[in-house]
Amino acid sequence: MSALDTAVYWVNERERIRIAKEELESPKPWTQDPILQDFKFCNVFREDDRNTRWLAEHIREPLRNDPRVLMAVVIFRWFNLIETGETLVKHNLHLDWETEKADEVIRPQPKWITSAYIIKSPNGYDKLTGIRWAIDQMWPHREELYEKLLATNSLEKSWEIVKEFPYMGPFMAYEIITDLRHTHLLEEAEDILGWANPGPGCMRGLNRIHGRPLNFTSKRHNWQEELQDLRRYVNTHSDPQVPPFEMRDAEGLCCELDKYLRIHNGEGKTRCKYDGRGKQ
Image (tube, rainbow, N blue to C red; front, side, top):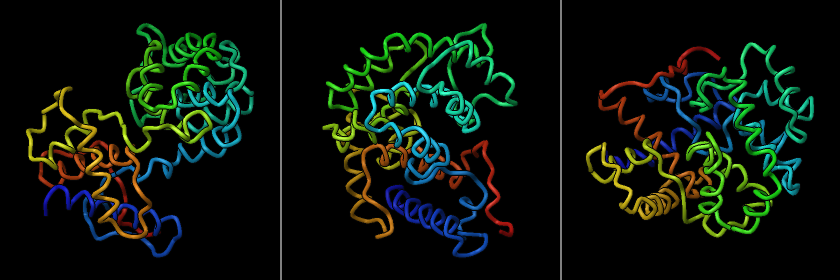
């Protein structure tokens, strides 16, 4: 099976697992694929991830037409732990940020942030203090930032603006812009089907599909065109149960394809195991 065919297979099987698991159509295992039984993979669509669903229900949708949605999303994503999100909402800190109050109510928690990805913050601070510092750098500029994003009508241009703030970085900025794509700020962005941010995992996935060395990362390469081709191919060849892909979905698929083929080819494993074999 080619890497491209494997990508479509992974989309179909991973989405089938999600549906079976959520609708409890059958007990474990939800797949006969040993890799998908034993290792954790993201959902096909980021909107189905647990943290994103919580954000959508409690922050994003209630504020989808409110200018305050911008910083509310930023504040949650910098922690990205549901328990911290609940604390933020309980004390209204996602709407009216007070750094000392945030320290007071968040610090007693056993965990402050998720372990799903690295949260960058200044050296010399504990993570909570560092995140507070980073939010403090954005908070005074929230109205100006909102107006800039509102005027762009572009995911890419908005990403370029957001990632200039201290310790935001390309990855975190991309997470925030992806969330804002589902709000009044960027729901009509002109490049929803034309742009994504290809990180290292995405590039490796595309390299596998196109038979290049895995460490190929040239910035001059047309990654966007390859993601467009992949998006169209998946939309044409995936099962009817799979909704149409946007560019963000194609980018995420490449990361998961790289992970899947790394395990399949015996090139290494991931740090996240998954018990998909046992009883319900």
